[in-house]
Image (cartoon, rainbow, N blue to C red; front, side, top):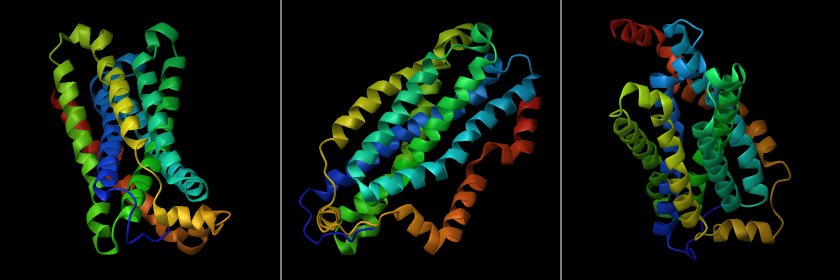
Length: 268
């Protein structure tokens, strides 16, 4: 990572705010998939399975993103160090937005059979790649623009985007859940995914207003970028990267809380 500049050329508040908003939008997209997995995906994409198994299959689809996230972090981290932090953050936001809107337009199992869950998995995998690039890139952008004595403070701003995205996703699905069950399963569940297009457009507008950090531009001008930055990270700290990725998966993967999930479903 390039060191931050003591005299940033742009407002650090604007950069950190853009990182926060972008992260919130990406996690909104990420979390609405999880809510839909609990509510409707089992019925719509795995209707031939027992309701409990269908719900678990939907959560397994949700979990695909946790496999993709470390890969996304490596890919976006590599090209972020080689090409541009800003370009990679814009790319990750567009990937997340397009894959999320695509979920809202997917045909169900009743319409195209086994192709429906396959397309759902593909969209979810792309979401995971995008979030892997977003999570680290947004923090890095904020930290590199921040004064040396406030890196931790501004680096924490993107983390606020996670609970904010969760609140937005939960609120959006609470609204569509007010629809009759038949309408929710027919078209209502698609609304949060399609609304994402508006949020992503807002996020892109904001992110296009910021630039790469002066420190990164200085490194680029001097030609001091590593040829294979992701390889350098894995060689020097690969074990810690793997442990961190597995720790996040263990903390967040819904299937690791299967006993509680089964009890909740059977009590309904």
